[in-house]
Image (cartoon, rainbow, N blue to C red; front, side):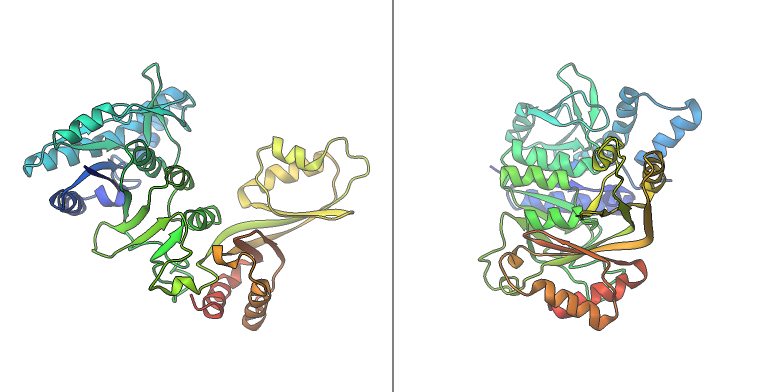
Length: 399
């Protein structure tokens, strides 16, 4: 039995027409002799009546702030509605199907409401349905504790549900259906030359997601990587091949991927660069204080007399309050963007940073700060230069 996981996001189940396309994808897999396990998100986005944020807003307006346990119970409803709808549509087309909650599908989690993690899988029921050729349609984004309490997996959790089930069922592949044809080399809204990447490694896509690209939830990539199961990003509304996410792209044949140093470029807007002078009277380490305040920092450079790093715009007030409390002198630069070039093939290749700097200089883009790892080079620039910076990298590295 060739088990595949098919996950359909909110836009794929938002309208009657979209849901018919979902059915076509499921039936196509079934007709090819595969055993699909379907995972669905809540229908659409706010203000759609069954969208997660719509349900949340309704209860908050009616009753006030929600306790974590009730929060999870409420937010599980949208996906359950989607699962029942798709299962019923399949049944009416003559395909036996069953709607399951996350817990009924065997996802047993810890008790950390709103951000639960997998403890173990109990997938005997799903396997029994598959053996009887019944299509399980699982409500994504949720699981169940040992005590039977409903939990949610955090934002992007339906992707994570699909990856969890893929690993637990030893699936042949995990298909993530959305409204785009695959993962692109850059955000097409800022770079007209952006195009679909045929294949990308787990590490590269994880870095792209972590660097601001809205491709797939990083936790889902982590689960698929652990189980070494290919992920495929596909479009519900087209027959495009999509993007395959695999262990490594090294050694792939019949593709330019073999010769390209950079796979893609991601960017994250709304960054602020802080330059903070050392405080001789400091009572507590600054970075320790920042961590205690749950402020995430990036592009960290430490010098004998000062530190430089970036934060997200939403943490500005919190950090400034902290710096003033401990009497630090500082300057800040708002309106920044981190542009990250990503590619596992750049490891050990000399001159990549030089080419990036040359491309930016030629395009008239000032680089404010840099950081690099084995597979990434991140550059801080002004937000006003994002489009021409990413386009310059596209041209320089022939993406």
